[in-house]
Image (cartoon, rainbow, N blue to C red; front, side, top):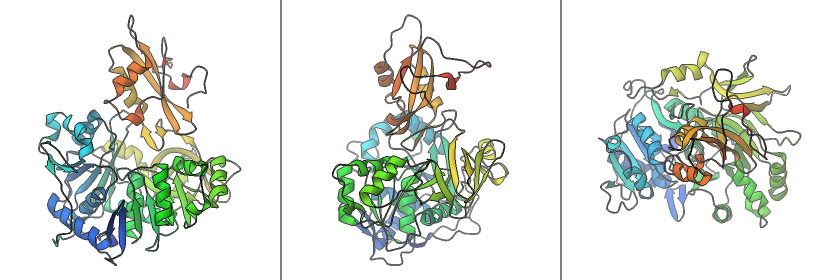
Length: 505
């Protein structure tokens, strides 16, 4: 496989529409609930057609969007899937330099942004938005940009674009090893693979199911949860982020049958003193992603709600790959068995887990070399180490790659180091992962200052604000006289140790 180019190769053998995403079987059934706003499948279908016509972006061109969870985010995805345009979701926590790097990479025809994020958009260099049409969701105020306005069914008909199955459908930009964003390209084929494997992992979603979704639509998690539900004709209860009272109110009001969310959300629910078994009485399954569910969290949740937490394994490049529905309290790390046609094997030399299947990405956006490395011999190199037990279950044992995973958000040490090194008082810096019970991992920085300068941790954090997203800010900063080096003269990250605390790692 090769990296996707910026243009489509042109329509040929067309891909089939994604079921009720384009042709609702029951137009009067509820598809999406967002606060007091209820969308039937017929209304969602009509609005998606209207937005497709409004955007008027041809197949192969990119539509970037920087939106919180809202119906407009769902509609942008649907419009892209119908027209053959490429959806480029952008993290709403990005600072202007991070947003600029993504836009420079994907060169969109349109950027759809929420009014709440216009300050970041307007802080972009003028050349970044050259020839980019900016549409604003919400009140643009005195902004020079065009308001999107209400997206309502208008009776317009837009033909489903006939595009090849390997045509890019969505590009998720994630942290790269050099600090530059990597664009993970999913084709129409692999989008279908993601949605099929998600349904398989969650026990075959049907029109009878109700899914409660608070994970961001601009991340692979919110995308797969929402779109899988809609593809199967289920009801999706969408909220913009997690807050405990609001989440519990949703459980009581909508009686969901399935949820797939971050482990810390489930842990907060289980440890709430007011937790009531009735909260989850309507559920047939509770799922999370990651490499493990700690035994104490599993026990707390099961004791409170009478349900186990099933865990799945995957990544933006390929999801879902495996699922484990049976609690393992003897030791951590069981990620279960393959789902959705995924194949897993272990490199006997390195222990790395390799994967292939219909949910695996097409490649990285305009990066042939990285694509060839990641998809060597047709297998995705996951960067994770694991093994299979005699019963056929896979176990996660650690990471080869050097990413920091903070509440499932990926942070590259290099991008944080690069931002710190811009401070005029900094001579050098190194960032490592430190284990954290609440967040999984957090970045910790070690900083060497220039002679005759004075710098505090607060100074560094304040300097970083606006340069990198808030979730990438170091949890702790230590000032050292020098950084340890390897024999080749590179910074030895593994030799860095926090004083009076656990070793980073």
